[in-house]
Image (cartoon, helix red, strand yellow):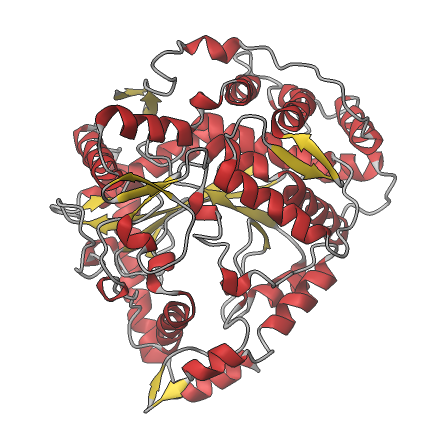
Amino acid sequence: MILAQRSAGITSVLDLSAAHPQHPRTFRHVPVSVVSRGIDRVFERSLAGLVNSREPQVLVGGRKGVEKESLRVLGNGRLAQSPHPQALGSALTNALITTDYSEALIELVTPTFKESWELLQYLCDLHQFVYRHLGEELLWATSMPSNISSDAEIPIARYGRSNIGRMKEIYRLGLGHRYGRMMQAISGVHFNYSFPMHLWPVLAEVKQREDAGSAFQSEQYFALLRNYRRYGWLILYLFGNSPCVSDAFVAGSEHSLTRFTTDTWYEPYATSLRMSDLGYRNKQQAGVHISVNSLDEYVRDLSRLITVPHPPYQKIGVKVDGEYRQLNANLLQLENEYYSFIRPKRVVRSGERPTQALKRGGVEYVEVRALDVSAFDPVGVNQHKLRFLEAFMALCLLKDSPYIEGETDDVLDGNHLIVAHRGREPGLKLNRDGRMTPLRDWAMELLDSMLGICELLDQGNRSRPYTSALETQCAKILDPSLTPSARTVLELQNSGQSFADFALQMSTAHKSYFLELHAPNEPRLEEFRSEAAQSLRQQQEIEAADKVDFDTYLAAYFS
C-alpha cells in the first residue's frame, strides 16, 4: 500500500509494504553489529580527523541529484510508438525532461539539493507534471523492459535536424547495431553526488596536504572510484531489483536462467540482472578496461578507445549508401558508450567532450549508475536509499584505496557479476584479496565502518536519518528476504503473475498515485512549463544557427 502525505508543501512518499509481510518494521532498530575485521589505519585516521575537526558538520551538505529513466508504455504494457510529448519540451534542450536511448524512454533529471527530501519532492513533482501530458500512457515501473517482441518495436530517440541533434540520433543507431536495441531499452536510476566544499580543506589537513584545490579533489574522487569497484557489489545486493526478465528479452540468446512462468525467466538468488552480463555488462565490452588510478590514466584510456578502430564495428559500416549507421567504427563512438558502475563527471561546456571537461577542471562530482528502478517506490528511489548512498560515497572516499593493477580489475568485476546473478544465495562467498570471504561477513564489516560516518551526517538532526538508513540496510544483510529482489520474486510466487503482469500492475498503481496526489504548487508547475517552452525555442535557435553540413561538423567534433 502506497500513500502520500503533504504537509507544509512537502510530499512524503510512504511505501507501507517495504517490509516483508512476515517481518514487522522492527528492523529499523536492529543495531549495527560490531564484527572482527582487519584494521584500515587510513580509514580510521581519516574518520578520526573529521570527527575531531573544528567543523562538526564536515560531511553535511553534499549536493545530490537523480536521473531517472522510464519507458512510456500503453495501457496493455506495449511500448509506446508515439513521439516524445511536445508539452514536455525539446528532448534536446530541456534540462529536466529528456529522452535516453529511445523516443519512448523518458529521462527525468533533477537539479542538485543538499537535502534528500527536497530532491524526492522535486522528483515527485516532475512525475506529476509528466503524467499530466501522457494521456493513456504509463511509465514502466521496472528496469527490465517487457512486452517488446523485437528490436524493430523500439524507436530511436529523435532530436531534430540540427547537427548536434543528428549526432545524438546516429550515436543511438550505432548502439543498436553494436549491442541490440533491447539492451538499450533497459531503464535505471543514476545518483549524482558531490561532497560539500568545506570538506576538502579539512581532509587535506588530515592527509597532511598543503593544497585542497581541484587536483587534490580529483585525486580523492579517484580514490572513491577505486573503492567503489571494490565494494560496489554491496549496492547491487541492497538495491538490485531485476531478478527476472520476460521471454522476449532473452529470445535467441544463450543464458542460464530458470523458467519461472510461461513467459518469465529468473535466477532464484539474483539481485540485478540489469547489471549482469545479460544487461549492461555485455560481452562486447567485457575486455575493455579503463584505469581509475588517476585522472590522467582515466582520460588516456578513454581517449584511446574512441580512436582505435574495431573490426566487428568496421563490418557494420559507418556511412552506407549515404546513410549513417554509427558515428565511427572505433571501440567506442563516444566516451559515454563505456558503461561503468560509476563515473567521474564535470559539467561540460558547449561542444566540449566529457574527457576535455575533466582535463580542464578536474572531477566535480560522481555519477553512480548501478541503481535499478525500484518498482516499490513510485519515483523509483526512496530516502533511505539516497541517504545510504551518500554515506557509502564517504566510506569509499575515506577507506584506504591502493591502485588497481593487473588482473585485479577482473576479480573486482567478477564480484559484481556474482552478486548480480547470485547475491542472495546462502553462504555466498566473494574474492577478497585472493581469499574467499562470505558476503554477509564482508557486508557487515562495511556497514559497521559506516556507523561513524552516519553519525557525522546526522549532526544537527535529532531524528538521526542516516543512522536509520544504515540500520535498514543492516536488516537486509541479516535477512535477505527484505531485499527488493527477494520481494519481487515473492510477489510473483504468491500472485502467480508473470513479470510483465507484475510490472504493468505496479505501473498502473503508480499512475493512479501521481494523478490522485495533490498537485505541485503553482511556482513549481510554472517552472516546468517555462523550461519546456524555452527548450523548444532553444532547439529552433540551434537549428537556425548551423552553418556547416553534418559531415564537416562531425569531423570537427572528433578533431
